[in-house]
Image (cartoon, rainbow, N blue to C red; front, side, top):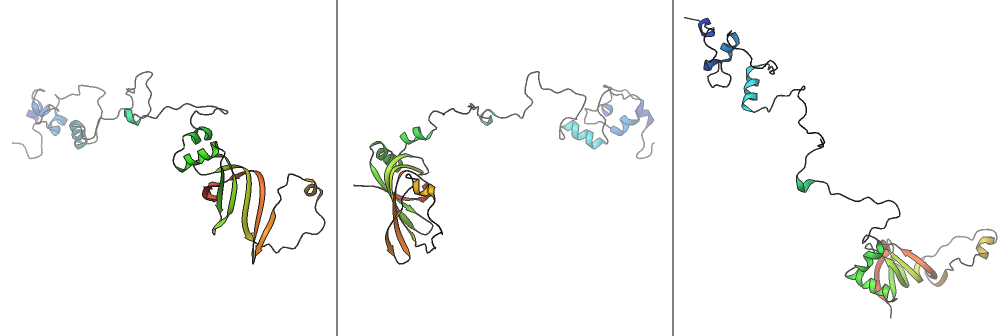
Length: 228
């Protein structure tokens, strides 16, 4: 009778077809297979494991397939090795254009024609050459207004105006005039915009000017109305 924990040598001499030596059998005895002279590896390049628990986890598929650095990649020739995506997750193909290209339907002129709502009404004013009054604002309230024709606009209410007559108010400037006469450039420049002070009330004054063209940012637009 053998002692507990020892291996009976008679069992080690049994046939290799014994279920206790078959690694795929539920009755496999790793300790018996370790000391048996009948058990042998079927594959000379079989991977080695540190313990039986790791082997069992690999055998049951819990830890996935063993890594083998000598195994070649399964990627076929000509197939990309990039990350795989589902059909609806694939990147959308785009066409690159060089400088000077104007994408059809994506420029400001074509977008104005497709404008709807208030922007569509503004497009009608532009096409019919209807004069509009644009009330402008500053950080504290209404700054003034501009009467002009609309030449172009975008969805952010940035306006390109023509034949502009602007009226606005500001604080009276109490600065002393600069010494010396006006420079020759200012005196001879006929295209310089003339600003006229029309009214002074307390610390505020009203000014007006006429300019041929103006670009007004949308953040300064308070309201746009049609002039009679």
